[in-house]
Image (tube, rainbow, N blue to C red; front, side, top):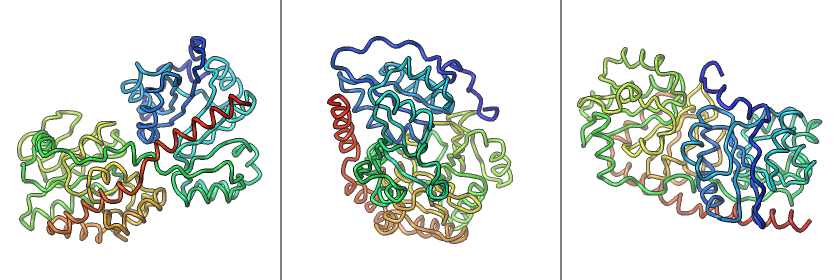
Amino acid sequence: MIKRGGYARKMRFRLGLWPKLPRKKTGCRRIWIQAVSVGELSSIGKLLEALLADPDIEVVLSGTTSTGLAIAEEKYGSKLLAQGPFPLDWLPFARLAWSRIQPDLTITVDSELWPEHMHQAEKHKVPFVIVNARLSDRSFRRLQFFRFLHGVLLPPKMRILASSEKQHDRWLSLGLDSGQVKVTGNLKVDSASKSPPSKKTKQKLKSEFGFSGKSFVLVGISTWPGEEETLLESIGELRKNNLDARLLLIPRHAERREEIRKHLSASGLPFNLRSESPQAKEGTIVYLADTTGELPELIGAGDIAFLGKTLPPNNGGQNPMEPISIGLPLVVGPAYQNFRESCAELFSHGAAFKADKKEFAKTLIREIAEDEKKNSEAREACFEWVRKQGSPTGTTMEILREILEEAEAS
């Protein structure tokens, strides 16, 4: 809270003091969606649009982080019945919020397990569903170890809409009944753009970043400490080989800007911070996008990307869907545990490339940058993989409607 700020706003909501909502319209169902942060919110973008387009559905959207809440308010505020911070998951606060929101269905995203929230759903006989459900290796191990808590963390009537077959099997292995778990696919496939930026858009972005129209642009996607230095080294090596290479850095946490600025200054390369001036001077080599929520648009300038949080000591990995959806080939470090299934598929399709260590990551970047044919084939592989994924949002919507109908019938 101290580091990011913004948590004091609407603090009463966190204490359960949500505004009293209007009486439900006849035949209208109210859905309460909790999406912790920017990542969860972005993954349900298409699902939210589908729900909001239905005149018989009212949506209440809550979140936890200040950045996620700000983006939710800006993007969906006028379309929602209500929007604000998720109440603290303790009995008095959760009970008060439930008495005011009165949902017919409650949804969380990815792997959100809120014991008191789930208890209130069971008490009010309201279905509780996790969409795009996935368990990281660490979360899975913890749930396996703390089996004595499963009665609280995995209530018998919860429904899991898993993001993949492997995730489906993980939830089942924790003791859930097969009727509770279904595979719907990864919602982030639908939420991603799915189309490359036009040539005009790409040139406009390059101009804004101070890059040449013919520059080769490497993008650092949601980078973590240590990874910016590696990418700076890559750019330096490419430029020594007479390639007009530029770097677009998008750190996972914008508040690291001063730490990253020191590395940029030490590199000797001309750089620009977006927070200080969106329009960079001509001749900029490194553009630091130290803002939040702009990644989907800004990466349109790229030719290849490095997936952040995958070089040790960082681990877990960031989501690869956004860059892949616009045909941006990925170089991925060895620590991508949180997206193991997706990355494995991308490697086998030739849309992404695995680097076992830092030096190999730099080698892969150089090979793809210098080999136009390899880059072109990788871009096409990205689009081919996305086409094979179908429509996870459509499948999820069908199941949610079935759950609502079952709840009404009972």
